[in-house]
Image (cartoon, rainbow, N blue to C red; front, top):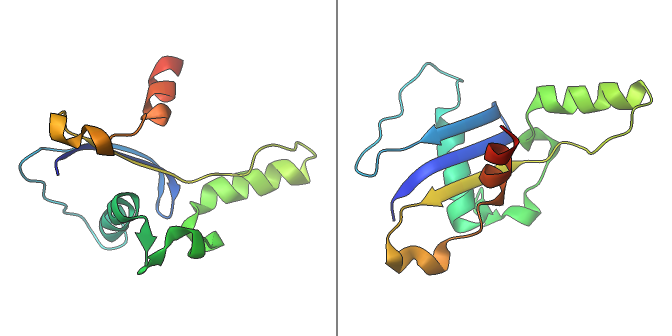
Length: 117
């Protein structure tokens, strides 16, 4: 199943990542602790609904959130500015193959982000 793009927000090392992918092959290269494994973990989670071999609903912990987003939220609360807590967004955009139509979601996050620009 070709994935054309991956969008990640507030997941571990990624505050925001919008990564277009090549439909044939992609190489993920980088230094230690920059997010290579996290990217693969996010793709696996969005495709299978599992994280660490269990349903993702059972694996939600504070350690999955991008720490600067959590820190910013807590600082706003301390300053008396209530707001929405950070949320994790992981989306994989599938190729335009008609046989994948039943797997395709609404892609609301990317549409909202693009409309805001």
